[in-house]
Length: 188
Image 1 (tube, one colour):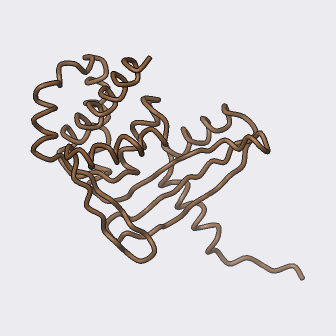
Image 2 (tube, helix red, strand yellow):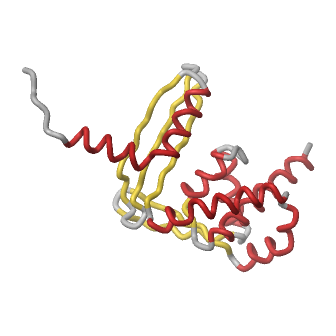
Image 3 (cartoon, rainbow, N blue to C red):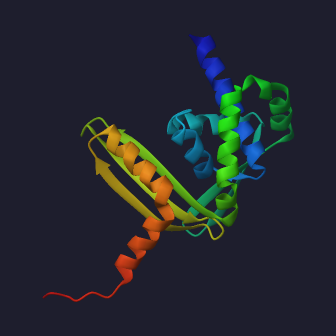
């Protein structure tokens, strides 16, 4: 059993090293999370542990920026991280590398523009429901533009909300902002 866990841990680290290397820029936890969780490579908690371990072991450098009430950590490869990836890149299955390559091609421009989205979900065993948190952030200024928290009953609803947010977050943000800022008549 320990061999499987160690192998999976190494595989997770290689995926992150490869993603950041192919993106060719420092990436925030949120940016890494979007890909890793969307593709079901690991869960949110495992990703956090893997990132912390990789910083501790010297494979990644985590640079934290404070902006207002938000702190954003950007991860970049260290020399050790690059060396390990060079040695072990072929251990990442070709279909997984292709998936990462396509993701980088499709999303690099958005990340460079600085608009960042995130979706996370949490299961509450006590109430037997899920909480979905969707956000959009201006990465250049380090400000939170919008966060929406929704409680839903099923995993299917979680997946649908996350898929819709990931595909349409800028349009949703624009529509909600327009609705909230337009003048309406008050019925008193």
